[in-house]
Length: 112
Length: 119
Image (cartoon, rainbow over all chains, first blue to last red; front, side, top):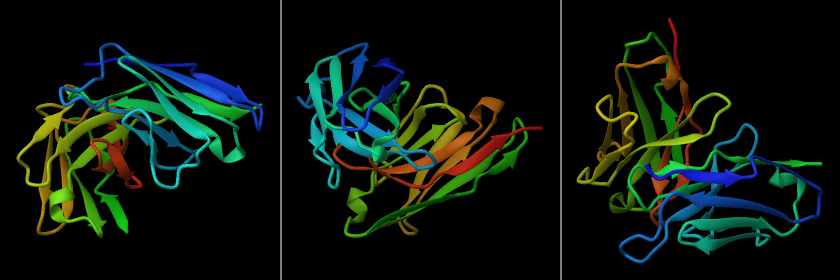
């Protein structure tokens, strides 16, 4: 299976400040069709996960534009330009390129 | 408006079985769009993808951790997704989510159903 490694595990952030989460895969996530199936999910406390970003950088409908996904190959990043209180939760990257889809271990974003 | 409602969780003894259901209401999607997944989350832990099924059952994939013990199926006539879970172990204790596939990813998630394996 593809191993997804996120860092940091915990991310204390001041309101209004930027935040960045790294996600690295143990092998390339470029599919044979040319797409890269790297996704980002947000899980707020007590809620089901919600997809924020699909195929590296495509924001889902209703996701604020302060969330930006980037990267290629094996190295990906989720950035929050200005953290708001509602952004508190755990963020997961997930690869859907190779069957046996796998998640990163999660990054807990909290307010300082 | 998409709605996914899981049910069938509960307390089961080690070695036991359960059938989890996910009732899907997915307007304006058609049955041809209904590719579905199961994902689980152990208490206080991260997410684990379990299984995928194409709308017609013609393509199915499992995580190695559940292959041979779990079976995913989809009843088009009832718009209901199932996960048959057998030979349950303590480490299968988790909230089980169904999710609709969109653009090759887990787009919309249900609220989950809790399975507790305990004697």
